[in-house]
Length: 319
Image 1 (cartoon, helix red, strand yellow):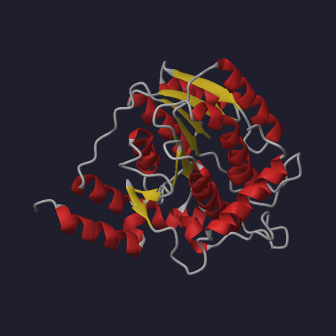
Image 2: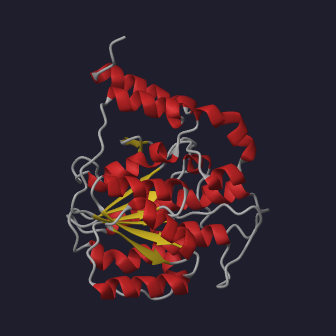
């Protein structure tokens, strides 16, 4: 059978996305890769930082970035796991230790990185958690909120001066298809008034990530950093398997592997602003809708409120 091309390929791509199961699974990835003849980007000379780099999507992303020629800055919480990941990535890589749930550690790390004079072209905000029970950080924040949203906000803001000096600079926020199920509650951002449900809290934070990426893009000067959000589809990772064992058992045969899940982040790391504009939500190398349920996307005013709330929680930031 001849492969689909042109409008027929676009129609099938849209149908798979609309039907969710084929679009989010390895079925959609395999079909799109063939239809659109994807290759791996040449990232020679790019300086890319990826958080949560010791397992799952983060480790796969770090390995693929290295294979594509990038210098990779791996950000990890655990030193032993970080060194093991570093060995898999190769020689043109560097390990940094930082717990993305700790504002103190993020400030320490960002200060050291800026003082080093290292160039940075791309930041991939990938680190995330889905704890089985409600937990709080030492600084008093709900753990899912702190790791998935508040910490990445602070790290990105602190590194923005260095990113703006980079070549075609870009921030890529690794969200989740789960964010389609919810809006973001600006009146209860850490969901203190709700019973704890891991998947709901995770989806809530992931919706916040998309809103925040959009707000960053709206306030960024023309020609500055491009802010993109994305989701990996249904990719099997240690975190997903532990948090959603039933879902893993049910969908196991069609789950993507981590390299398939992180493919769009690798592509975005090398794509020009013209080819992959900021302010979009990507999956499988194409911009996708940000809303499937009415009222969940959030308005530009909501994005302003979210950024202001996060800024207030982390304290004063440098210009």
